[in-house]
Length: 321
Image 1 (tube, rainbow, N blue to C red):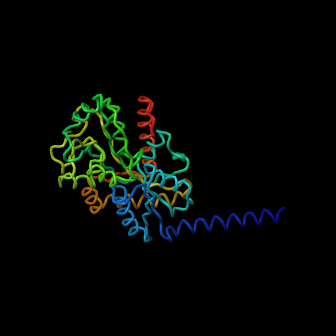
Image 2 (spheres, helix red, strand yellow):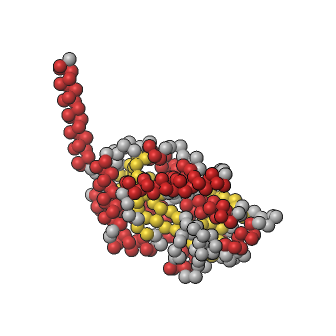
Image 3 (cartoon, rainbow, N blue to C red):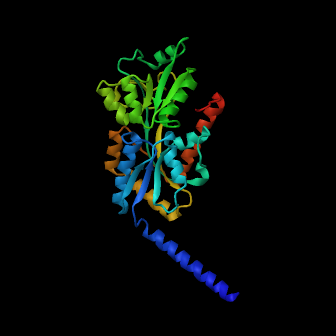
């Protein structure tokens, strides 16, 4: 019995030392970063920028892997099943909490995922094709209430901020729109330009250039502050939808069980990156704002988003396809 106890203690000591050594050496190989949307959109752009910055900061490659589908959920579900060693991460967003509110997640984000850090936030833009008869949100509301109305809006997928903006717009205006999900913002924008859909709440990272080039027409901003590059375009809040505030807020995520020291190193690296003039300038270029917050703040943010969208679902008896 004594020999068994000695062997067990020796094994535990070796295991503990090995684990500590692994944490101390982190990272000692490339890290994968899942992205839940197609290349070219805001999420993909942010993931590639921050992966490059993290590669420089931590001395190992952070490799972006696009796993598009289900409003970002394909990537996040894969993350929830990954080995919790810090070598598989994902750039998630508030869609994680919103999809949970809509009952669409095949994972439990509260127990199977670990938020690492808040990354960046950006509003959306309500826009239509350049030849659309709509010149204001009020035009859309009026048209939607016609007896033969069948208006469509596109999104980057169910549960994306682009989709959520449409759901909130309908709830606050009493309109009925038909949602058409795509596998990313870029495919949805192409559909909008071709007239395949009537409108969308697009990401400014791509949309501003299309609007300035006359390929799309902006009607309103979904955040509480206007976008300087789109002078004269009001916020939905200012058009009468008081408190309307929907955008994409990005969070670096890991599977649950990653060592605390690893989470701390990653969180501190993101904080330093977000404080750099280069990152502030990058976010300005894509009409976003770096966020501040580590694991605790990121978890609190997702919980607040979950409560926000749960309330909308309950009050409006929403059924998401």
